[in-house]
Length: 133
Image (cartoon, rainbow, N blue to C red; front, side, top):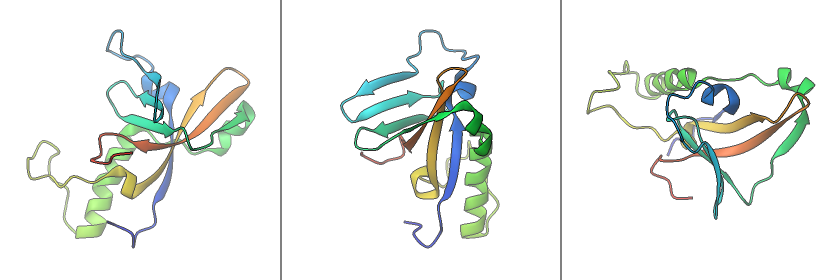
């Protein structure tokens, strides 16, 4: 759809986004036949397809990754809308708000910190974006 635009690479810290989750008993990570699914406590749902490869790295390499928050992603989508259509973004509650598939805008990676020594980088797809994986 937006093939003339280069996708922005973003890294989201799973551990940070799910800390202080206000929903009790919410499943945050589980396996499906399509792959590993992550729920960021209602802020987003991601799929790491079983056909993709993840990287497990030393925690000292974490500082090499520029982490993007979910709040920043929302702003980036608004900026994308302005850049592509030269219109100021309306209130998100406006029914006429143009929906953008984040998979068309971003190349997304989810970072999960396993322990004090290691973290994993998963290439993921945003779920619930009118895309069937």
